[in-house]
Image (tube, rainbow, N blue to C red; front, side, top):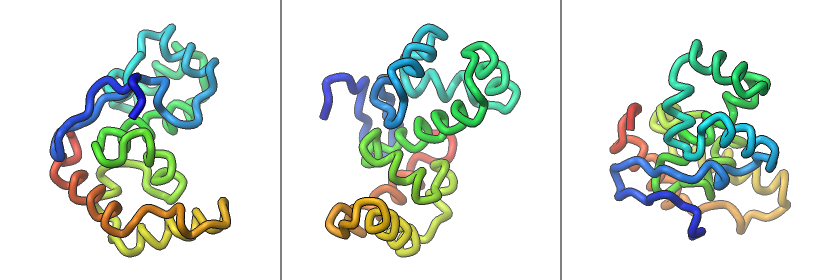
Length: 148
């Protein structure tokens, strides 16, 4: 685990990560968030918790709302301790955009979606997380509840 991780919670508590840990953000985007006072995933979730606050934050940061929504979705998924910043992007690209959605997605179907994504993008089945890990994500998401 990187030393930039802010904290790692237990199975039922939310994890908070340095904004630099979120996958797919350029250095410029990280700087925009940091200059806007957002240095952790928890701060991003708090400042973007409603549509109105997201619109205001996107305007303040001078970024397209679709990018901000993606970052917030990644931060939301990263709250799950066993997902963290390592798997939040994989979940998002597999069609899961929130902790709440993860709790509603059947485990076997999600595992198949992830496997298809891994084969399509990496041509490797062995990179797919185990069904047991996907079950752990779902269990921890349910234990956290939607609000975390």
